[in-house]
Image (cartoon, rainbow, N blue to C red; front, side, top):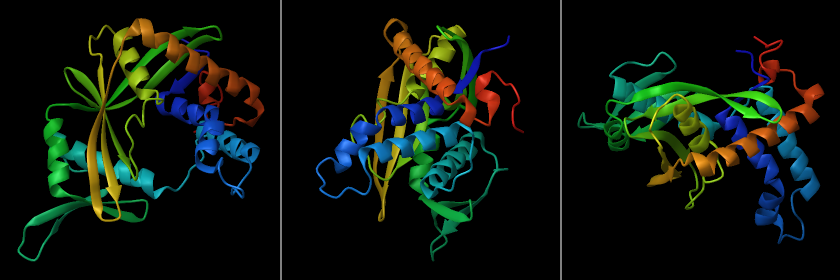
Length: 257
């Protein structure tokens, strides 16, 4: 089936960051007499960041690499396998006890307390890891294919692992993964409606906290919200079509390899 557009879950998060750019600027710099950039300049920076995400422009982020490394460690422990993506090793103390598990990625090495890794692996014992889901959505702009990878699919719930340097309650409520993934499962006939962001907050001293941000997918309430976000992103892509070089979002035409 040919789709008019193809959109993955976290791309909707980038779009939401652009939509909320004025609110973000006001939160951080609205009180400042000398902000680092004007409100208009900040909005433009968010627009460019969204276009870079659509175009899959490579970027270097220690925070993103840390999250990827932790997720891979957990998946390897859940599936009792070694990693083909990165080098993972155990770190021992002077008495020969394993204190942490380290992963090398992007020229950096990240170490995580072994108890934290075991805790997460224990929560997801038996899970389907990095489970691909996809489903069509009819919009006023045509058929959109929504897709993405679920970190950990359990029999009763979808789980997405997050790492962050600062957490506040409800931090991910405006994200779209807890809409897209259950929607895809729902369209496939699944009755899994519970979604959890399993969050680790890190500080310079180590793990600052572990949190569970839970949502329940209610189609009658959530599908219209998701459709509105999808249509907004499609409109952005059409308005900026000349700046989009990776055509995969336009149904796969001229996909850049």
